Image (cartoon, rainbow, N blue to C red; front, side, top):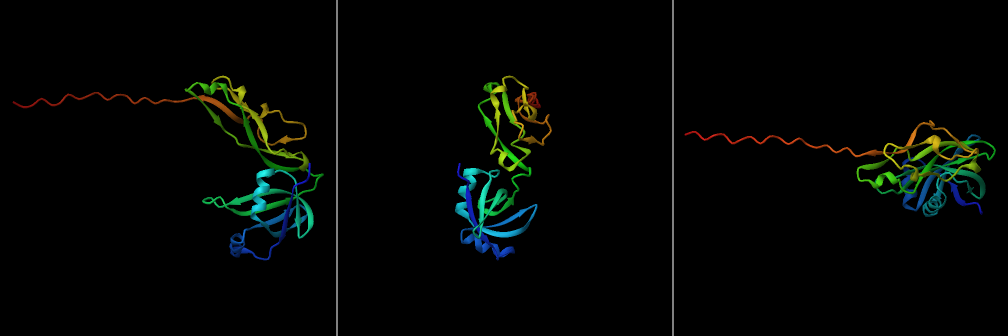
Length: 201
């Protein structure tokens, strides 16, 4: 599979002045790593958005900084909470022989048979897992099979996931990912109807 690439250029505009970059279709960024000084960069926003859709945050990409290739991961994405527009992105330069920690999304597959009853609902407690692995071994997501939730009060914990030997999960093994519970229906007690006062003669 061809390595994904993204071009970036050095950025001289810093601080609040970066707003002018966003108006030009550029996203402020920075590159950092264990043996790398933080470098301010800028990337074309449309290219960055399409790359994120294709590979997510954990995939290895070749970031060409002023033409020079660097192996990086997209580490942090900041968006405008109102418009969802890209505000800033951080690239983490990796050493392929050194393990890294990352947050991997959970991908829920199938349907929990137990929730077919209208009295039971599925509760998802986690949406990501904290993991450690070599950069080349980081998955884009971790699958969770919901078909195992066949009865009320059944749960899927971290220890139940089929994790390979190349991936170390840092979450508590007993942490619940998803479970089925009953719906609580509160019935308001009917108030006694008061008899109208007797009319005075």
